[in-house]
Every structure is written in structure tokens, then in C-alpha cells.
Image (cartoon, rainbow, N blue to C red; front, top):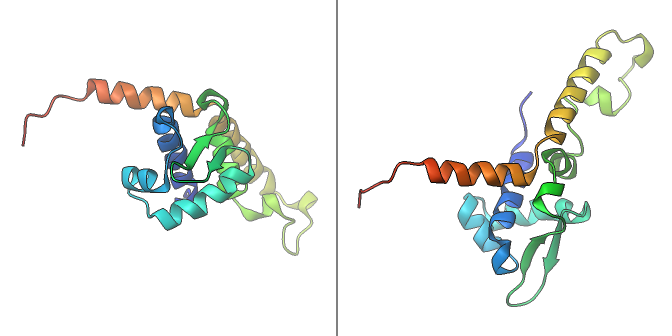
Amino acid sequence: MKMSTKGRYAVRTLLSIARNQHNGPVSKKVIADEECISADYIEQIIVPLKNHGLTIGMRGVKGGFVLAKEPADITIYDILCASEGDVTIVDCIRNDCKGRDKSTCVTRPVWDGASAVLAAYFSKITLKELLDKEVACVKNRPASYTI
């Protein structure tokens, strides 16, 4: 299974907002510059995050985005569900199996179980935990004296 760019960028976008919102709403430009994601793509990522109640958009000269909840209350699962729809690893878990009776499909429980494991894993990781790990990484990074 490969996570889509949209899901990965959604996590990075919310991390950027969480990291910077203490100064007020975070602009698309700040997020784009920090995360090396185009501002147009940030806009596409933000819409479903707003629709799922994870961010709040503020208009105006000093507008931008803030988190709608505390970082400790936003899980990676929340972000992926908002950006991806869910974390199932095969389409037949979301929809009926094409041309097959799902009650007789012997592989469906395998994919369903794997999807449940992923959902449980992503549900345990919060934005706050990622922010804390980021701070620890920066503190432990050796000093660079190059110019």
C-alpha cells in the first residue's frame, strides 16, 4: 500500500499550521514555503480539512488558517479520513465487491483486518506528538558551523 501525496501533504499542512498559529492565522504562502508544496495545492488540501472541522479559514489581510481543535485532539487518522476518505487498503472494503458476494469472498476479511490495524495505528498518533518529536529532533540536531 502506498499513501497518496494528498494524505501526506495534509498531515504536513496541519503540522505547519500547528507550528505557526501562535502568531495568528497561517497563510497559504507560509505553509507552501515551509513545506515546499505549491500554494494552489495547499488550497486543494485545506478544503476537505475545513469541511471535516480540522481547520478554520480566516479572511482578510492577516487571514489564513488555524486549527479548529487542539493538536492533541487531532489524530493522523482524522487527517487521513478528511483528505483520503478513509484508510482502507483496497476499494472493495469501501464498496461492494464488483460482481462478487462479499459474504463469500475469502480475501475480504484479510483486507478488512489490515485496514482496521492501520486505522487503529493512525488513531493513536496525534499532531501534538508529531510536534513534540519535531522539537526533539531539532534540539538533538548537531550544530552546523558552515556558511
